[in-house]
Image (cartoon, rainbow, N blue to C red; front, top):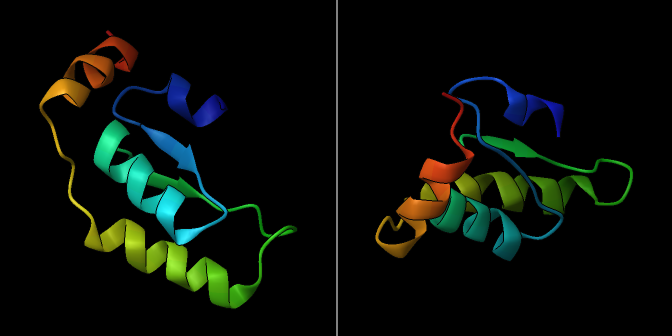
Length: 71
């Protein structure tokens, strides 16, 4: 995704609340991309809530985040 080419941006796509939570936990995403054409407004709201309420786990996931960071 083009957004991830910019320094400090870690975008993730989610079409279910569980995926929104995982993109935050495992990738430390700071932008949530929602496929509006494929999910309802209610599911989109659930995804946003899950994304905002979830913290980055760090640990073993930190290495991956370091690799995808722009120099």
